Amino acid sequence: MTLVRRMAIVTYTLMLGTIPAQAQVTTGSITGTVTDASGAVLPGVTLTLTGDRLIGGAQTQISDESGAYRFDRLVPGSYHVKFELQGLRSVE
Figure 1: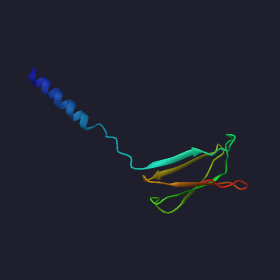
Figure 2 (figure 1 turned 60 degrees about the vertical axis):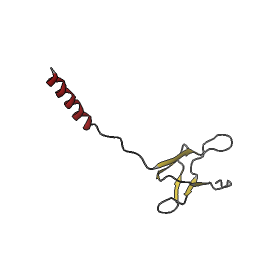
Figure 3 (figure 1 turned 45 degrees about the horizontal axis):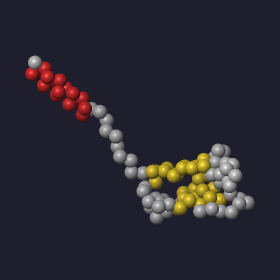
Figure 4 (figure 1 turned 120 degrees about the vertical axis):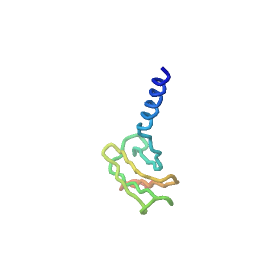
């Protein structure tokens, strides 16, 4: 009985070694929805992302038809986002 128990423990231990480990994520993202003061979504807004840790210089996005935007694969740090739409005041 002891041999069977030991074999079960060894088998269980080996099975744990085959379970894939979750990798740590070292980047993040900035996402949101552009709206006006009344809460209406604003498609077509140009967003410019800047920051000291930003690789490759400033990044730009244009909000989609639902006003959504997303900047991916950002290293931890401080960032500034500037929102521009023709006919409206820019916001940073």
